[in-house]
Image (cartoon, each protein chain N blue to C red):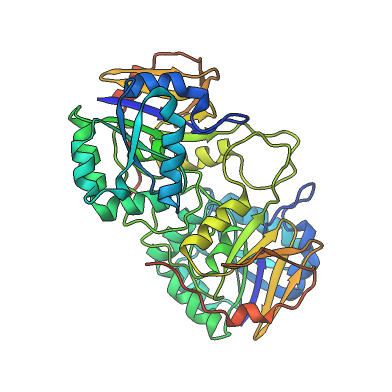
Length: 240
Length: 240
């Protein structure tokens, strides 16, 4: 199984995927072809164009699965899939209702399809939607996602701003509330970072540390570039 | 029907409900009794104690419905109900599974029960959970909430921070995504503000303007203290 799970697709001051273009190019393979799932944003054509333009300089071609006669077949025949960010509730709802959730899951777990996700697309790789940052603008059939890894990821992980006067929960408070109701580790991926899974290995990428939240323990910083294979053998326990 | 819907219960630099204590005291009535629903936070006893201590100086007594032999009966016999903030997914799940959702809804709509909510408790007064800011840490049976008003509210409404380098969506972007999928007005209530509904009247409270989002129009600022009865006669159209 080959996964490339990005916190975000657009880093501050950079173009789409620009901060990670070498790694993306390596993952897809130069001159390769990418099947793109644009369902997290409303305008599928415009979104696909952004991805195609970002990858064209590396000779990578892109097809939006929404524009094919049969998206399920497009995914069944693809070698590399990219699920882009946007709204994770809208995205999961679409993956469930189109049947793409099952097809993607089976082929990725079988090692037949390499999976790249950013933001909401990274949320999809987890067992559930429960550590999404997004607004629940659409109602999926359930929170069950692709379950490619046995832990949760929080993309766009954000450290508290000590100067803030806003009284909404900090990200850490939200994740601590998640752990009150679910005994499942959460990997907080700061912007500009990613997790690369290859078979039984898992390695953090990008210049910033990740932050790991587990029930009953203080959050732990994981250094940039760390190997974290132990995450892949965790057993998640969600509440009912 | 009498509703008192607060953006937040704790304003920056103030104690619990301190910024709005006169209005709360007026709504409950001096020497009155409050039935409190603490299900949005994990520690129900501690949460109830915070509310009781905040209201004791006004001679108001508080009972946490979780601590009664029969929460449904406690709500059926109450005159004023307060649903406190916390996590709105956990809260809605509990309201649905305990049957409180139906009892509260019926009695409030019949004018038998005055309803006060803050943050997640204000989300509950809307048709659905779809404009919550919270992390989906728990999975409710559906996103259907109490539907006491025919529009959505976004509590803790937050203006964009022009100095931010974080790439997550701003609140306005999230609400615009909501409107892409739902033709339902959203009232953004900034911290320290509230909406007071009494029969067919509705008035904004607090020192800041509210921000109204409707499909196909620029967001509109509503001045502090405005009468907004037109919100009560809107017809919401959610996607499937």
